[in-house]
Every structure is written in C-alpha cells, then in structure tokens.
Image 1 (cartoon, rainbow, N blue to C red):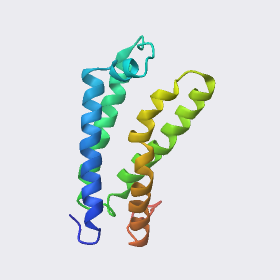
Image 2 (tube, one colour):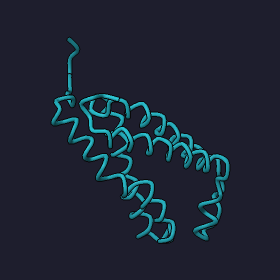
Image 3 (cartoon, rainbow, N blue to C red):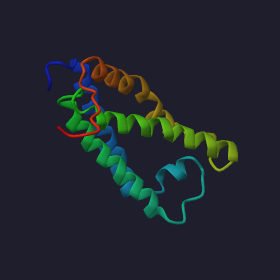
Image 4 (cartoon, rainbow, N blue to C red):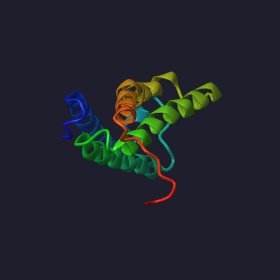
Amino acid sequence: MSNSSPKWMYNLLWFAGLYNLVWGASVIIAPNLFFDLASMPRPTYPMIWQCVGMIVGVYGVGYIAAAYAPARHWPIVLVGFLGKIFGPIGFAWYLVQGAFPVKFGMLIIFNDLIWWLPFGLILLHAYRSKEMRFKLVSD
C-alpha cells in the first residue's frame, strides 16, 4: 500500500474488487438470476449479460491492483467511476421508456450509487497529491 494514501482507500478498493469479482461470477454462473428476482423476462441472449459479468470481474481485478497505490492508479478508479455514473443514466433512460421495472434499480444502488462518494474522494486525493497528470507528448 502506498504511504501517501489513507488506509480506508486501500480497504475500500479491495472490497470493491472482491464485490465486483463475486458479482461478475454470479452473473456468469447464473445469468438469469437478477431478471428472475426482478420478475423480468429472461434475456434472449444471456451470453451478453454474462459478458457484462466478465467485464465487471475485470474491473474487480483492477480495483484490487489500484488498492496498493490509489493515487498513482487513479485512471483505474476514474474508469470505474465513469461506469458508475453512466450506468445509472442508462438505467434511468430505460426506466422512463418502460423497459426496466423499478425493482431492477436495486442493482444500480449497490453496483453504482454507493461508490460515487468514495471513488470521487479517491480521485480528489489523486488530484491533490499531484498524481493526476496528463501528458500529451511523452518525454
């Protein structure tokens, strides 16, 4: 763990990583589970949902790697944070369209909304610690 980052960031990213690995594995193993719990029709192509599970699992590996130096590995946190912003936007769009029941939104709470504040604080820490740099041309 990087000495320049608070311990809670290490713990949070480890937890986020494990959560994503477990959630991703559950979607791969039982792709219809969340649809059944939300009383939704099962998808015609469950393998697409299983691919989402694989992507989420890969994020989990990234979060665990970022836990050891959260400020230095801010791009991993940023990509995750953006997904956690755009996921609820997409859900809200399809909820208004009538394509998703409100009950399916439980996934949004636990997969996205609860992570906004801590991921945002990690990104703020990276910015303040001057780790967040953008280079357009390599040295």
